[in-house]
Image 1 (tube, rainbow, N blue to C red):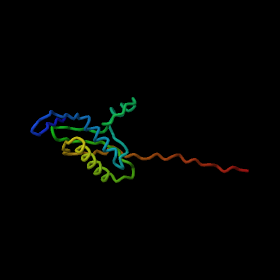
Image 2 (image 1 turned 30 degrees about the horizontal axis):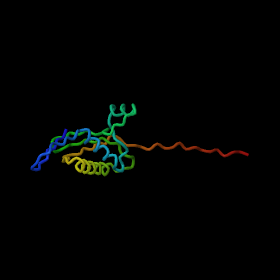
Image 3 (image 1 turned 135 degrees about the vertical axis):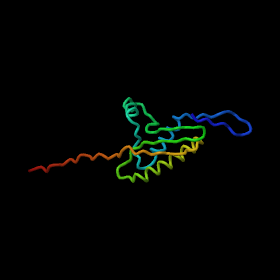
Image 4 (image 1 turned 180 degrees about the vertical axis):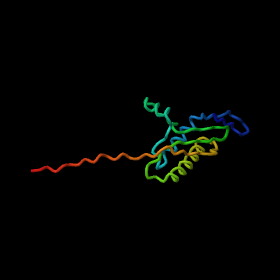
Length: 132
């Protein structure tokens, strides 16, 4: 858990940010990027979703120190997206969002591509001409 001490002359107390909070912020930021089909959280997260519970930190692993954090993101990209561009955009957007919202310095954002979402083709319905 990150802990901040007010460095002003008068100390008012501390602010603690839980790892889960940083993970949720990072996960939501990643899903805002075009080309990201979703997060990949492994079997535990998939089981949680089957039970109807939404896991907002799915596909995110964070390590939070006193003033810094490192983030691992596991995503599924949309078919046809340029993976390197999507990954780079995810890194930048997650870093900017987490730093802005928490005040922590993000030292690294590791993006792991876990799969590609291929859209399902709708079955073609052929209409046979009627014979008169």
